[in-house]
Amino acid sequence: MKRLTSTLFNLLIILTLFSCNKEEIAPQTGDLVIAFPYTAQLNGVPYYLFTEGIWTTPIRSATPLREGTMPSAASASTGGKARIEFKNLNAGNYVFVLGSNNWSVQVTAGQNTEVFK
Image 1 (cartoon, rainbow, N blue to C red):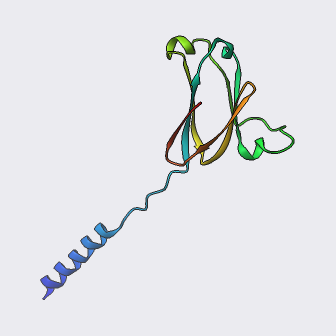
Image 2 (image 1 turned 90 degrees about the horizontal axis):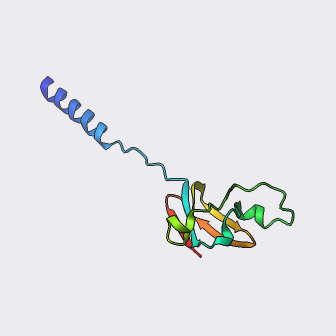
Image 3 (image 1 turned 180 degrees about the horizontal axis):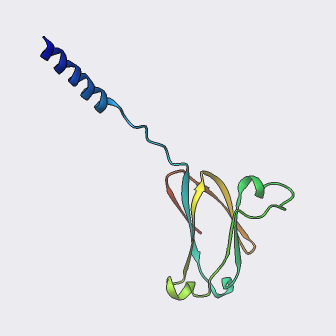
């Protein structure tokens, strides 16, 4: 009887250990790639990424979330196409600004979003 109780107790411990599931944490951020034809006029042109909320306000005094400058070697190294990558963005809507152009883009958590213009 003692052996049966011991065996059942051990079996209960083993089942308890294997039945515990670790809860997976859903990703909160995503990546964004914006691709477009590169021309010599874009050499050195600054680009900016704003959250949609900041971009739509009447007074745009806030600094951009991310910014940079178009490299001059983009046309030679990528066959005339430019690619700008933004990593670890919170899911949501953004506005990408390049010179006088602006594009609305959306980032989905856990995904790599590619936008071609």
